Each structure stands twice: as structure tokens, then as C-alpha cells.
Length: 606
Ligand code: F6R
Image (tube, rainbow, N blue to C red):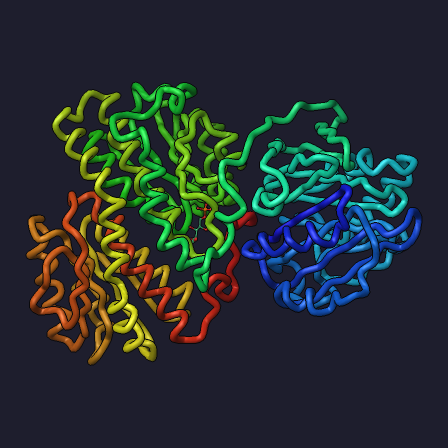
């Protein structure tokens, strides 16, 4: 939610700030704005516009002044609608201090009334504006030291935030802070960057610093100082970004989503590499996986669906009870957790607030935490005992695709690992699954090579008002994922059901012509016949059935073939046609594929 970038250095600041915003726009696209320091003591130059970044870019023209430090923001609105006035940056009443913010300031109402009573004039409806006025006062009382002012202000804020501020009296200086919301430092040569994620500055530097909770960072073109809120200097963890700028570009594809769908053979292979015979001891060094009485998987959205598949694999191969919880529900029901509980948070971004909060709850009650994450340097892995990184590379499209299949792989690897630690998985099974896993990249490749007819078929259903997805066993979470993708991208009513559950109510939804996608268990599975019966039930009531499976289903109106795999691994294959259906439907209905309405990637508010 909200993309944040700051630049200070030798270049004209507009260029890296704008470039950063382009790469961060997937985080929020309701409005965008930039503030630049032009000359010491003068009012800052600022431009902001409602709507996508392109609206802002159109207004920039030739008028942008010389500047070597500035900040930019792309917004996902929470407090106040997506208008020019509510867009960030926000200014103090002198127009010399600018602030951008990601997160929510929970005590902004009280702060605002205190500040208004002190004579501050507010112009927006945002929670953020209270902070800029507060910072302005604090800076004066700290004799113009922006970093000291930021530390004082952060201590007064409740909620979650990444904040970046500049002041025209201190050209070349940017001060940032973070609590429960992401902020990374990009270390350049004669230039430095601050951003919500590394993609903002990957074209300039691959050297990054990770910032911890409640830390304040103070950068100029030649210095980086990190402190805690008390002002004690902290040495941040350094790391190298392992992917190139080209990984965050469309690379000839019309949309990031399509590119990411097609990257899956590679992202699956990269996530598997060196791990099928067992997890590297370095990965699990920080966690004791013996003596666990239950596993709790916590995640949101697509990652939650990966967790549901993980439950089947862990229960079967490691013979241990697994609960899968929607992170947003978990902590509020105060579940029983103890030191024998293994919690597995799954998160592409590593910043999802619901998942982070659920994980913190579990940790504070003694649980051991083994995260699955795609983003190095993010908060969830940093606060976990151990982490299994998925190697999907940057996922830019808002709808998750390659991160999902990589999460599935992580689930299988963890299930096998736990099975080995507990001594319950046989060598034969472990070898068999290892071989089957290794074949997945080429099987996904095969699906992608034969996907064109599915795109044409999808367009036939473009005017449908609803689409239902059925599955059994691991096909059930796959059906849920197919329905979620379609909702997000096609803005169409879609629901996933367990095949056996239909007759307990949902079958009433079936009408003449209702499209139903059936994720068929492999032909050799004991559940294949059961699912075939469920298909007959909906067909008898008028449904048009599209079956996805490793054998043709004679009763289906359309069959989409996928290669045969081990039953538990089938979601990795079956989800690919479902992703393509959602993608194609978005195009057929004229929707924005990479930035669907109302959504943002990386949900850093609860
Ligand atoms: C759906 C989607 C979301 C995310 C969810 C969790 O396509 O992308 O449902 O899966 O917001 O995000 P992460 O994995 O970053 O925690």
C-alpha cells in the first residue's frame, strides 16, 4: 500500500524519483506526487495529481526545476478520497517541509485537534497531514535538526508508518522512519536512496540496507546514519539484491501478469534448486523443529490458498496436525499457542500487516516461526526464527501468480523436511516426490506452450455474470485460487467450492449456461470418479463445464489438459490455466490487468 521513494545525489532528482514511482506504482495507484528541494530556504517545488502516475507525468512538462534531492509517493487511499489535495507529499504551513507516508496514523484525530488549536492550518482529510505539522513544530524545537524531530514525532505516533521528510533549509538531506511498514536504503556511489522496496532503485544500485522496527534513517549523498528512537546509532544489515532491473520490467510482454505467468517454469526451478533432497541446514539453523505438536499456517489471499495446499502435504508426509488460518482473523480470537506450536507465515511481500501481526501474536506466546517469503530484507523474515525464501523474483502485477506456485513448492519442501525430522517420511516417498518436483518446471512449460485455445475459449464466457470453480482434495484450494484470480481481474462474481459440498447448498446457484470450472483429480486418483459425479450433478442442472485435468472428461463441454503429476503436486499445474483464464477475461472485459481496481500489492494496513 503506497509506494515511497527518496533520492539524494549528483543526478537531477526528478529522474530517479519518477523512475522509482513507476516501479512502485503497483503498490497503490490512486494518486501520485513529488516534492523537490530547489534552493536553501525557499519553498519546495511540489506537484501532485489524483489518478495514476501518468496523470502526474503529463503535468510535469519542462517546468521542473534543478534539484538534487526529493521524495515521491504513489498512494492507495485510506483516509480521504483519491483527490489532488489528499495526494502526498503534504507540506507544513511554510511550504518548506514535505512529508510522505505509507500506513495509518491511528491517533491522527487527537493530534489534528491539538495542532489546529495551536494555529496549524490543515488542507487535506488525511491522517498524514497531522504528522507534517507535528514534525514542523518538533524541528523548530530541535533547532532545525530534522532527524531529531523525526525521532520525537515517531514516539508520539500510534499505528503503522513509513515516513520520509525533506526540508528546504537542509538541501540534500532526507530523513525516514519506519514502524510496521517497509523502508529500505539503496546505497549508491555519490547518491543514496530510500524506498518501500528495492525495485525503486534497482536500476541504480544493488546494494541495500535493511531497517528495523522504530528506526530513523538520515541520508545525504555521502552519508547514511540509522538510529533508534532514542538516538542510539544502529548498524543496519547490508545485503546485495540478487536480481536485475530487467526482472522488474515487462520484457516484451503486454502485461507484467502475463510475463509472470510465463516465468513460472523458472521461478519453480529456482525455488527448488538444491532443496529436493533436503533443506540446507543454514535455512533451519535458527529453529528447532523437533517436539512440535501442531503446525499453524497463517497467510492472506493467495498465500492462504498455498497454505491450504500445504496442510494436505504436511499432514500426509509429516503426520502432524495443521491448522490454516486467515491472518486477519487469527490473533483476534486469541488462539491457544505454545512453544510446541510451529507457525508458518506465508507472504510474498513479507510486509502484509495482517500476517505480521498474527505472527507476532504467536511469537509472543512462545511459538517457533518458520516463514515462507519472497522478499529479502522484509519484516516477516526478519522477525522469524527461520525463513525459506521462494525464488520467484520480483512480482509486479497485483494479482499473484508466480509467487503462488513458488509458495506451493515451499510448502512441499517444508512438508518433506518435517517428515524427515520426525522420521515418518520414507526414503522411497521422499525420492519419488523429489523426482516429481523436479519435473514440474517442464510440465508448466508444456501447459504454457498449449494455452492459446484456452484464451479463445475464455473469451466465449466474457459476458457471464458468475463463474464457479470446483475441486476436491488439493484441487479445492486450487479452485479457491482460480475464483480469487477471476474476481480480482475480471470483476466477476466467482466462487470456489469443494466438489462434495455442492449439494449442501451451493448447487442452487447453478442455472442454464452457468460456467463451471472443474479441477479434476488425476485420472489415477481415487477421487477422480467422485469429482466426475459432482460434474454430472452440475451438468444436469444446466452448467457448462470446463474440466482441467490429465485426462479428458467425456461429460465436460470443454477439456483443458495438463500433464500427469503426483496428486499432491497437481495444484502447481492446474492453477496455470486458471491464471490464464483470469488474465484473458480481464482483457476481454477491458480491465486493467496489472493494476485492478481498488487493489494494491503489499497490504500494509490491517
Ligand atoms: C491475490 C493476491 C493477494 C495476496 C495477499 C497476501 O492475487 O496477490 O491475495 O496473496 O494480499 O500478500 P503477501 O503474500 O504479500 O502476504
